[in-house]
Image (cartoon, rainbow over all chains, first blue to last red; front, side, top):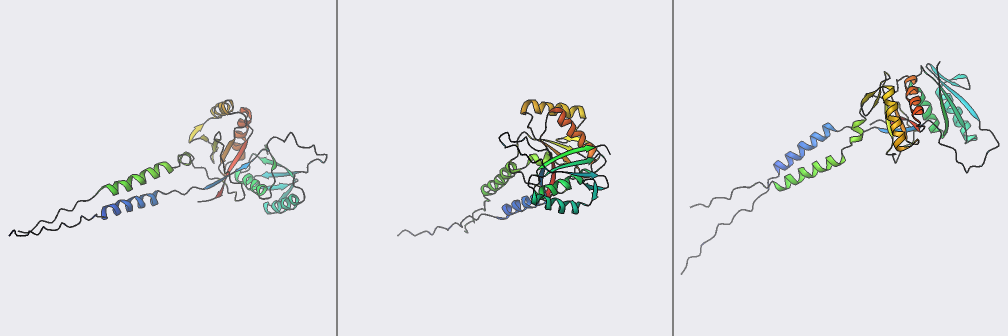
Amino acid sequence: MARERKRPQADPPELSMTPMIDVVFQLLIYFIVTLHPVDVVTNLDVFQPAPDPNAQPNDKPPQLLRVGVLFDGYTFNDAPMRLEGIDKTLAKLAEKDAGLTLMIAVSAHSEHGQLVKLLDICAKNNIRSLSVVSSPN
Amino acid sequence: MKNKAPEMQLDMTPMIDVVFQLIIFFITTIDMENKALETKVRMAMSPHGPVEEKKDPRTVTVDVERDGTVKIQQTKLSDGQLLTILTKARATSGGSTPVVIRGDAKAKHDDIHRVMAICGKAGLWKIRFAALKEKA
C-alpha cells in the first residue's frame, strides 16, 4: 500500500504595501511643499469697443463725467473727492443713467494702483463707457 | 526535514503603476503659462473686475515693474523692441489683438502710459489692465 504523502502547503504570497505607501507619501509631501496657489486675475477694459453700426443715433448727448487721478488723491468734475465718495456718486448716477460716460484723466505722477482702484469702482457700478487720458501734471 | 517557506517577492508592478500615473497627471496639468508670468509685479486688487472665461489666444501680456522696466515673458525690453514685437503682433493677428498690461500697483502711470502709447503706435487699441481679483 502506497503511503500517502502530504504535500506542504505553500503560503500565499503577500504584497508588501510599505514601499508603495512610502513612495506615495514622498510624492504627496513633495507636491504639498512645492504647491504654489495661483491668484485669480481680472482684466479691466480701458478703451470702449467700436460702436455698433446698427445702433440708432441718440439725440441726447451722453452725460460726460470727469474723474481725475492725481498723485495725492482723486477729483470728481474738478473737485477733490475721496474714492468712497466717487463710488457713492457713480452708483447713484449709474442707477439713473445706464449710458454714463466717464473720462478719466490720470496724472503721470500717480501710481498705477490708484487707476486700477478707480476702474474697479467703474466695474462695480457697471460703467463700461470709459476713456483714459494721461495728463503730464 | 522541514520545508523551506517560499521567499517573499515584492511585486513592483502596482507601485510603478501609481508612480507613472502621478507623473503623467502632474506633467499634463502643469501650468506653464502661469510659470512664465511669475515676475516681481505686485498687481493692485480689483475685487469687482470681470473674470475672463475664455482667453483670446492672441493676447500679448506686457509686464511693467515698479521701476518702469517693461518685460514680456520675463524678458526685459526697450521701447523700440516692444514696438517691434507689437507691430509684428498686429501684422500677424490684426489690430484687435488684445494687449494686457500687468502693471505693478506702485508703478508710475507715466510708465504705463508709455506702454499704452507704444501699443497705439503699433496700431493695437484693445488694451486691458490686469489686476488681482482674489489673492491665493
